[in-house]
Length: 135
Image (tube, rainbow, N blue to C red; front, side, top):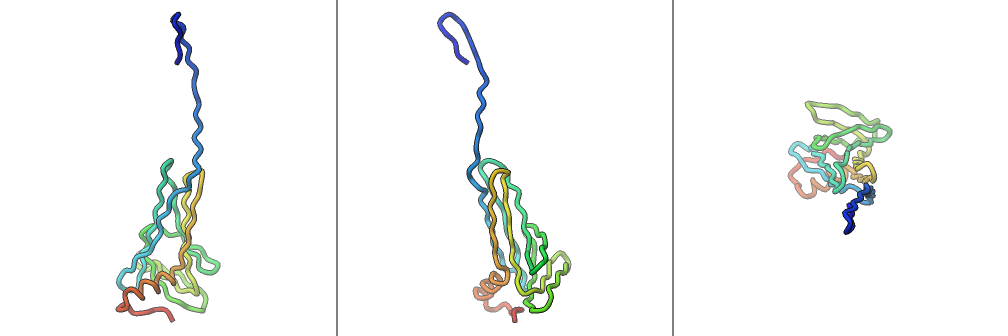
């Protein structure tokens, strides 16, 4: 609003466009759970909007949607992959298992991947008492 010394007042709307140039921050990790399990941990944050975040495990030609906090049991096999659910635990037998996580704030995206068999091996190296399921 503006006014002059004669008392004239005028106002005009002002439109401000914000352009979000920053992608969401994505936090992705795994935690070892006794019994040879991995807990998948992922979340996203953004200063402009609440980002959507989703995860998929890619095993050969299959993609399995997963949520944050999902428990996974992995067994290495050169045969065809199998996917089972056992009391809420995702049981995968495959050559490889790649966790892909995608976050979007509506303007920008962030993608991260981790090799779950490599993560399992790192956790086993840090905790040598855990028995190995990898051939």
